[in-house]
Image (cartoon, rainbow over all chains, first blue to last red; front, side, top):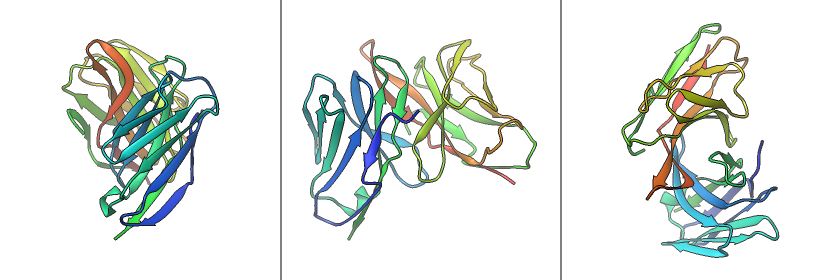
Length: 111
Length: 116
């Protein structure tokens, strides 16, 4: 079952610009996570935000969570060509140790 | 990729053959997961194991089998019953910090299986 759905499916920007990706989910969660995947590689964990948090920062990443709207956004500031990758949100299922992943946003940062 | 090894990186098999994908970890974590990823898609859970000698089906377990005889190893067998086995397969472990699990997962590098 696909819990998280990212938007847009693809995003192309110039180096230095900000990139914003959104994720919507359907059921209640304990936390929401964002992962990054370079082409042909495994996923790398970026950031986790708990359901009682509204915003979290990590370096150039800023994540927001709106549980009333069941949505989250990932902002990458001052993007670099090396940020080119697919980005996935993942949600737990109300405390389960399983994660449900969205289909991802493919980000291309042009130098 | 941390201490998670998946081998081989690329695997080719003829239709109708069973094939086993390896996943090994040296991080001493209990919970391990197998996902399948198709082009342009997210990850779908095949099987997961929270402890040795125990495992549960995920969302798309049909045509797959697993075993968990050792904590370090969680091999996945793609059987001939799997109708469309060509995909990218990812193994992951659950990260536990200070005895608390936050569902954060560490992934291996993946195995790309192509059935000819």
